[in-house]
Length: 134
Length: 134
Length: 134
Length: 134
Image 1: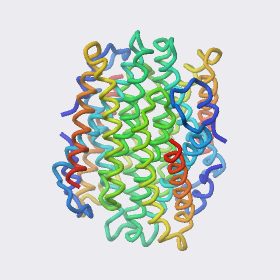
Image 2 (image 1 turned 90 degrees about the vertical axis):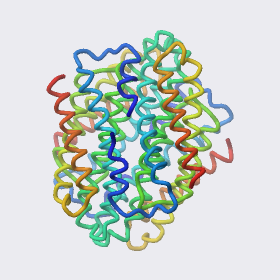
Image 3 (image 1 turned 120 degrees about the vertical axis):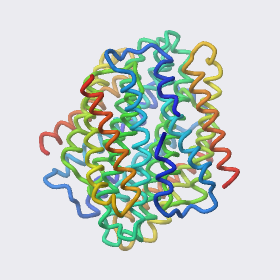
């Protein structure tokens, strides 16, 4: 359990017309996705057949960095700007899509890629839902 | 629910003598702490009496940045180095201690500081437990 | 002086059709922008009239987080994906635009906002140039 | 050229007894180190003999994450706390030491490891100088 929902409710928001549940889910999925991606990149690098996993490791690190940034943007209400939020969500959705695509290729051989791919898919869906609703 | 434990179990680890449950708890507390701190800093800045909350906002941002870095260090098994891990956990514990101290001063007036202070305290404790056990 | 150009030349790249000079400039501007934004947000929070600067502090932190993520995405060649890079550059350009707009309002009273606003403008331009060229 | 020095001088500091030149150098070295490490980890992962470079890639990513966090802590004056700063600098110095050690092993074969190792060494030295002076 996280404090995401409690924190969002702890102070008056400037963020208009945003479905709070979708926002909380998106922040939680992005937090989880960032951690899974860092761990997956580490596992991919350490695999004996590492060279062919390099693209997967890199895509996971890109996704982790974008998810970390977007968690923070979504966690701030005061500077809310619809264009910033939209572009940030799109960038994270693209990074999740790319990492999911790489993880899919290795999901049968590597358990980390299966877990990480699922985390990316859920995170991308949470971003898309927030984008449609915004 | 996060994928932290599943990811840690998805590939052989180099990390010796580490209690897995304590490690998972520490990563989850640090993920939660980072998000709570970013949100708390935003709330503190936006408070009408913001100037006297500036130290609290800054301490929360320091804590968020350190927690984000330590989540990642703890999520990597391949480059495990006891001295790096120990110094990183100590740095996060200090940042949590400083933010907790600031949040305590405002916990009665600001709900965000109460939630964030608790998150910092739990995260600092998880770091200390991992340090003692390492 | 940074090692950005030297590092980009130190290994074979997968990144096609990218002007190296524009890429190096964009990474350097984003590194500088991230640091200036963190510092500016701290200065804005600490200002005696902090409450009216809260939006500026928040916009600067959003921009710092996005710039930090994009530096990393641009620094990786192996997982190069045109759609990820494009969306990331657009997200950073938006965050720079929002922070520049806030900083402009305070540039005459606060030197930090003048410096930070300039850093954001240069970073946004470097992103736009890379987007046009991509 | 960065705006690090200009930003530090743009607002009154709470940071006592800190040599400004050493602080500026440390922030700049950490910014550079973070970028070099991300790029080096990418190059190491993509090398045909990647598996034996996995520790190097991981150490570089740990160092990048710690350097990114410490740049931000050092860039904030308002929440200055000597214990937080000291622990953060020590953690970065350890991460630089570990990455330098890994890069040294591959510096003759891989140019990225030579550049990145140098960047880590300079960053560790800048941290140590700031620690001695604090």
